[in-house]
Length: 217
Image 1: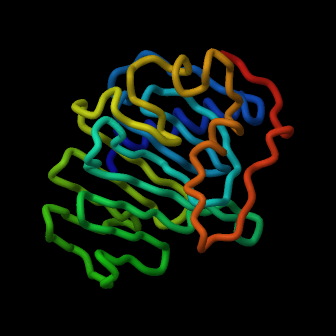
Image 2: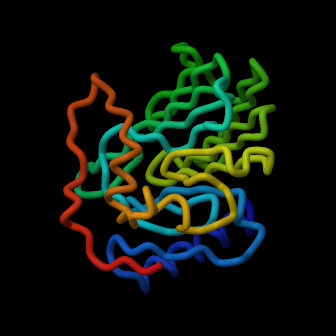
Image 3: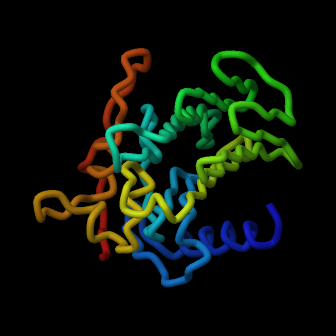
């Protein structure tokens, strides 16, 4: 991960520590975080455009999907849960063109087949180091998972303005698009519930949107 990545996690933790629950925190104008979306700790999320919010959903959600064209290059879904009182990431499901990569803390598969790292096939390289799984792809997508509660997704600039999901649309304009619909402001809980995949194999409910506290734009 290196000092660069560690610095990002420290900044995110400090920012959340001074905010109210379920606030929207506008992005800061620093270029090196612009192509990174992340989720960590207590259901925290940071969009590609730098907006930080909390969404305590435990269903299966669209984290980031290429929504710009009829043919989708990729989709990344995330399912969080709480175990022994601590939030964790239960599953990350990646669809890279026609290849399915499933990451869990105790099992990882490609197209349903368990693999060992380092793994390279279909233009996908998966390595594990110091407890982190890193997925590199030839389509400009890199995902890093700490096998517990944190995931970081980095995308090539060619996807700007073409995304949808909890990571936002990556258009360079924090808050203005993601948290508005038909000129009406959305709370983080409303925005998060909209990303529910509605997986019939999972029994879960949308987050109660009345939990919403303060929202700052």
